[in-house]
Length: 129
Length: 129
Image (tube, rainbow over all chains, first blue to last red; front, side, top):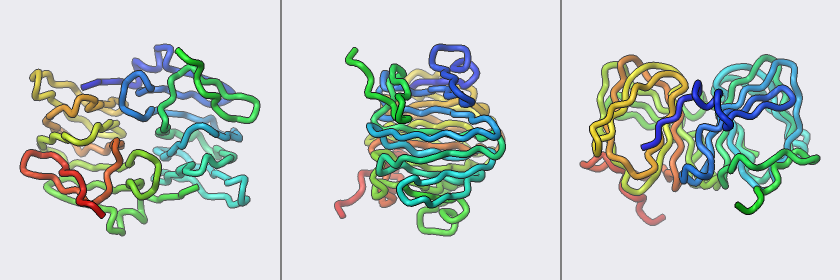
């Protein structure tokens, strides 16, 4: 059994911040669960375009309000506590935070922690260990 | 892109209640994400022993207080908002809710929705479709 505490993760190298978001990786590939599990907080007023070409991701809103736009269709979905969106088709999307958003994010395959967002908003696959 | 809303799931056959817990399955195997994603609420004062022999599971506490006991070692871990436990070794465990617990649960392989808890607290593998 693994025990992970958000307060500890936030003080570790598993905490990543960038352009208005903070991602706290409670589970990474090395934990062997077959998915990674992140608490991601996005600052009020922010807007981000992401395209995870190598991962599927589910995002569940714990608190806050915003929207997610599917850039393939132009459809925009309201985000509020209790909403989940799943990028089951590696969907390119724009996320907007009207207020601070606190989310749970699950990636498959699991993020290793070595990825970086590239110029297209994708995580590049991790380099070989 | 899939959009799932907890309020809709709670009014569907993806909502399961049993002995003091309620599991709202926002993502199941049929959604094709490679994991299932549940919001599980556990009633204050409850105690449950589970043993998922066929799945690994991560449980993240959104709200509430309680504990999880690893029955292999006898070790008991405090659960509070921000705590995650991962049953990476199919750990048999006892979960106690001191107050109502609201949790996010992720299973790999994904739950199909057809499993039932058997007499040992396991989910039996789903019958063939």
